[in-house]
Length: 254
Image (cartoon, rainbow, N blue to C red; front, top):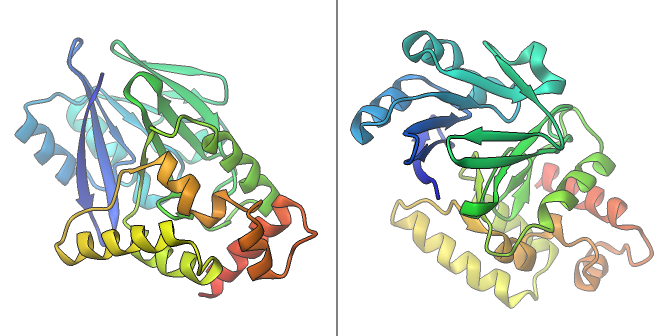
């Protein structure tokens, strides 16, 4: 089992430290900035050995080079974006495994937000680090991919165990939930979740990580087969990718 430390940075980003205690190895996931990571490492008395990047955007790789210069850590990132990941040492893709000490991550290719986005799943710790592909009650914008690509990507994640903790990279839950209610206004589970989210945010607490089971019940981007969502969108005869694409288009305008 790994230990996970969450670091809020910028306006709404999260960096994660993953610590494997048997080997004393520690990875930073998507370090936007070096300073907060170094401060957290000092507080936890951990030594940075790796960086795990999910994609190339600056608010996910901005601290790579400074952290590597300060610690000598090994940078792991998506093979399809290796030319855009600063300081990358190890390139991984679908089907690969990455070992952080005695903990093993399974790698998924999840393009859509970017063309080479990946996710890291640590099954023994029930933990998924999915960057900007899947959010609590949302998903990433399609900057470099198509709705069909993103729906296939999300399909790889939504079949993970319902107990999986979803460590996404942004605190977007409240805004995502407000949109989700417009797509599925009669989903009582969604409304109950939103009440809890609003209370957490009012008190200044994070809403991340979430559980995959909660996402399957309340995240419209994982549920295009839902008759209620299809009726709401007027797309009863469409396929799942078409329904997903319309949900994404409506969220972009929300």
